[in-house]
Length: 418
Image (cartoon, rainbow, N blue to C red; front, top):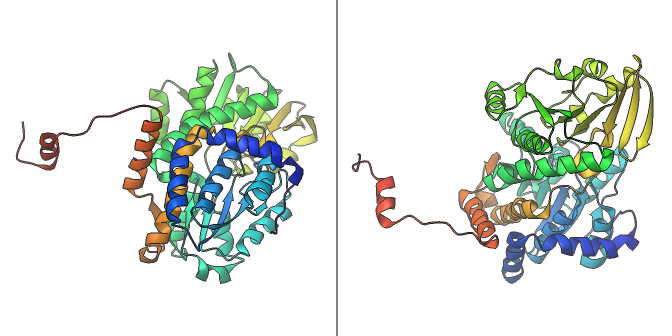
């Protein structure tokens, strides 16, 4: 079996951690049992470009149980958990091409390695596999029946491709499922981002000024959790509706030029580039912390920061201290990459349970319906979304009401007015 990981000897620790995460993933466990029984993905070659974590391991194990020939690479150079990669290779015989800290050249070599398998389905977190198939590996598009996409940034890229009519196969936007973005983006990102900042810095949040750039679902989660730890939270936005929502949620909202002077900790969650620019870095207080929890490190203008600095040094693991030409120091966490995965373990398993159940069932949907779909971006079918919610509620010991026949008739009629 061909693979490229850091150290196969780490597999023992990785297997224990994979099993620990599996305990908190009851929905995916149920999907796994069903897949093992019916083998809906039998004969399917599936290339997954995802963060190689314990939760992802349980997803790809489920895909393999469903009959898929699975191969895995990382969707970010700093997000791989090397012990997990080792266990997938040794204990589960799943080829993995991922090493934490890999350089850009190796990252793309790994992308190409999984595409060399001529996948029928690609599973992306950031659309890198799809982008590569549409640029440097166009010969492979003929084999792909469809793709699934995990994150907001990837969905944005894919929808742009669909609008420009260059998308060569259908894509299921797993990110847009209610059981994904309502929970994964808000509660998962909210907790794991702060976990990453704390592990990297051990700074006190209480009394600090915490600036959240972007108030989408991820931004809402980060702002909520930062306030919960006692921070004074400021939100920056370009969308008036999201900005208004932040105000109504009790946060101060202002353009970045203002909080750049007073913030202690800055976190970007926008999906856009150069959100924190050179002029913002130059205004920051001495010792300000800057990090990103969006998918790509382009949210921070690191080139501009380098040009405004006279030196840089690593002061802690995952903390780079830039000395600006004005004498002040600014610390960038995790090289500007996803801080929740660069210095921590990513989202808790219980929330990824729903996200990855969506991924597995979306792959099943593509096998069954892919040939009838157009080359566009689709949301996860509502029946799959609601079934995952029902399964999650059941796993939590919660029950809900059902409509009576009379109530169903009332909701479906127009004659029964007041």
